[in-house]
Amino acid sequence: MKNQTHDKSRRAILKGLVSIPVLAIAGYQPTSYAAMLSADDPTAKALSYTEKSTTEGQTCANCSLYQGGTAAAGPCPIFPDKDVAAPGWCKSWAAKA
Ligand code: SF4
Image (cartoon, rainbow, N blue to C red; front, side, top):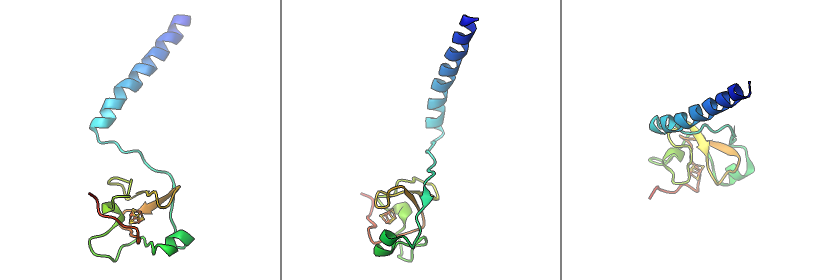
């Protein structure tokens, strides 16, 4: 009985180890579950954040501060605990190096 428990635990660990390289090869990016930043947020207003950029060639998706990768929304350190829209923009936009 005890050996069966250990076998199950060992199998679970090995399955977990096998899945890590598979996720890396598949280009897995963790999904963010933070609430979306509202344009009515005081800091968002101060930085003229908008969910749809009107500044040609500048969006959150191509900002150096955007941490959402290719996701439609993701984190930005300017707005902790909130996700910004990839097509969005704010005054802190900075070109990627
Ligand atoms: S700094 Fe502004 S433009 Fe850049 S990702 Fe954050 S919200 Fe978007």
